[in-house]
Amino acid sequence: MGLFDFFSHEIAIDLGTANTLIIHEGKVVVDEPSIVAMNKRSGKVIAVGHKAMQMHGKTHPDIETVRPLKDGVIADFEAAENMITEMIKMINKSKGMFGGRNMVMVICIPSGITEVEKRAVFDSADQAGAKERYLIFEPMAAAIGIGLDVEAPIGNMIIDIGGGTTEIAVISLSGIVGNQSINIAGDEFTHDIVDYMRRQHNLLIGERTAETIKINVGSALPELEDAPEDYPVNGRDLMTGIPKQIMVNYSEVSHALDNSIAKIEEAIMKALEDTPPELASDIYKRGLYLTGGGALLRGLANRISTRTKLNCHVADDPLRNVVTGTGIALKQRDRYKNSILMDK
Image 1 (cartoon, helix red, strand yellow):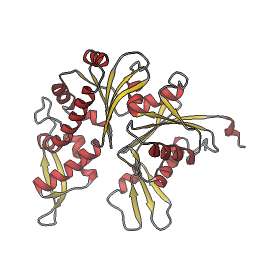
Image 2 (image 1 turned 45 degrees about the vertical axis):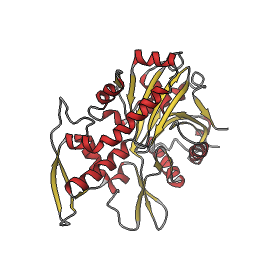
Image 3 (image 1 turned 60 degrees about the horizontal axis):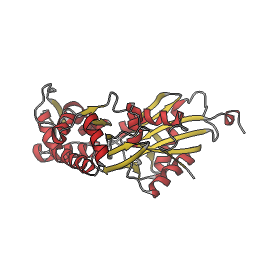
Image 4 (image 1 turned 180 degrees about the vertical axis):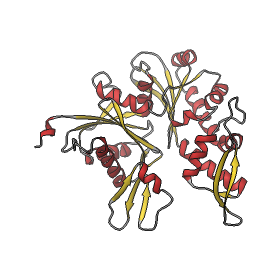
């Protein structure tokens, strides 16, 4: 038994479809894209996170980039295990402090996950070296991270728009009273932009380019008070096969995203319809809480507020609310024992 086996290193992981964040000792120490670059011949990991993302769409036949998670759950078990292991190594590579099975790990998961998918997450954590493994649902972690009192007999509605899923949950008394989980989120927005550019401009672009369009001129509304400047987009002309550049404005992107956002709105309305009346009264008073990367989409909170006739609050740090809440639940496991799941 090694010296460090006598100590437990507590790690909170937001294992997201688009990005993985890890908290250690109360700080976010890893914030990397959820992607792995593999050598197809040897099966070895070449890069993870940002380095692997730089290779995405630019590899030769001997190298493939893999996104281990799809729609918020593990789609490639081996790649997920490799990704978690390599990202844990990033925490303190120089000291090598993560030798042995000395980790206590809490991982957040979508609320609509199946038992088989839960087992896949537990197994990945086990293979990565965790001696104690816990799970927490993303909306619950987000609510804790936002600073809501999830233990109180008060209804709060969380709308967490991540990379692969949108989680809509009503939380009260340390539990999820009702939830809607749909596979419409950031990745779908990206695909919408790729399709729009192909249909409207005969321009073929990749996912990385679509992602930058979404960040720079993404909008949920065709008219904004504080409009971003038009954005130059490079791609391949489908008519001539020659690379070219066009300018794209936020109004165009809002039309590209309209159908997907409408589906999220429908899911929110369904969740509100299914909410018990006493909790609905609380939600009317307190409003909706919007978090996740999708919360940063310009005009989205206003659009949801107009549709629901309720106040829609964007969390202060939407990209990190989930991992922050996961870290708090990890540190205060006794307090939040009714909100977390332990591996049997």
